[in-house]
Amino acid sequence: MGQPRSDITVFGTCPPPTAAHGPDYLEQVREVAQWSDRAGYEGVLVFTDNRSVDPWLVAQTVLQATGRLAPLVAVQPVYLHPFTAAKLVADLAYLYGRRVHLNVVAGGYSGELTALGDAVVHDARYDRAVEYALIMQRLLTSPEPVTFEGAYYSVAGLRLRTLPGPELVPDFLFSGSSKAGLEAARAVSATAVVYPQEPGQQAAADPSVAQGLRIGVIARPTSAEAWEVAVDRFPEDRAGQVTHRLAMARSDSQWHRQLSESIDRQGVYWMRPFKNYKTFCPYLVGDYATVGREIARYFALGYRTLILDTPVEEQDLRHTAAVLDIARSRSGECV
Image 1 (cartoon, rainbow, N blue to C red):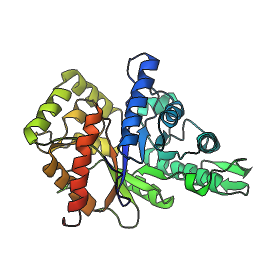
Image 2 (image 1 turned 120 degrees about the horizontal axis):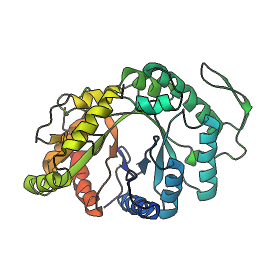
Image 3 (image 1 turned 135 degrees about the vertical axis):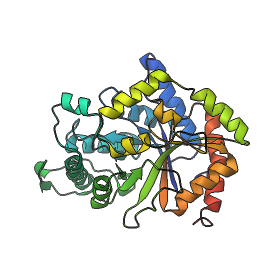
C-alpha cells in the first residue's frame, strides 16, 4: 500500500474502548495504529466522551507504536482548558517530534453534558469551540504572550514555554454537518467534517472552507464477497437498535438525527451499523469499482479529507487502498 496522494487526506479511527482488560485494549490501539501507519494514512481519530479512555493517553500510545502517524485527538471544551490542551500538543511534539491533530467536539450526549454541569445550547457550543480553538492556535504559534477576551474564555499574557516547530503545528477539524459547525470551521480555518448522505443526495462542499467526511468502507473484489463480510460483521441487533433510539432521544446533534432518518437498505450506502449502534457513520459496501466510484463522487463534490471507520483486520486497509486508488483516478470524471 502506497502513500495517499497529497490532495486527499486520509485518517483512520482508533478502536473504541471495550470491556477488554486495559492492556488488551492498548494492544488493539497499537495494532490499528500500525496498520494505519503502514497504509500511509495521515493519522487516526481518537474519541473522547465521558466513557472513553482519556484520548491523550491513547494518543501517546499511538505515537509510541508508530513511526509517522499523527493522532487526531478529539477535544471537548468542557473537559480541558484550552491552555491545557495546547500544552499537551506542545509537550507531545517536544517529547516525540511528532504532530498531533485536533478534532474539536462541540457537543455530545445531553445527559453527559448535564452531568458535567454544562447547559450551553447547541449553536452557542460552537461559538465556545471557536474561542477554544483560536486560543489554542495562538498559543501554539505565537512566541509572544497571548491575551484573549471572549464570551467564554479570558486569558491574559498566557504563553507556552516550548512551541512546536511550524511543521508540527496541528491541523484543526470540526464537525460541520450543521450550519453552526460549518461556520465554526470557517472561523478558525479548520476542516469541516460531515457524516454524508448518499453521493446523489449530498450537497457540494462549500468552496470557502475545507471539507471532509466520515464513512466506513467494506470492499472486496466482488460485491457478493463484500456483502458476506458486511452482514457477518454487522448482523441485525434488536438491543442495539433500542440503544440507538435511546441515544437519539438524548442527543441534539443534527448529523445524528439526519443519519437516523436515512433509509436502511442493502445498497452501496448502508446504514445498518449506525442504526444498530455499532458505529457512528454510514458505510459503503460493494466491489472495488462500485465503492471507488461512489467515493469519487464525494471527491468531485469537493470533500478532500476522509476519516475512515475502525478496521477489524489489516486486510481491510488493503481492500480500501484499492478503492481509494480507483476513487482518485475517477474523481476528475465525476460531476
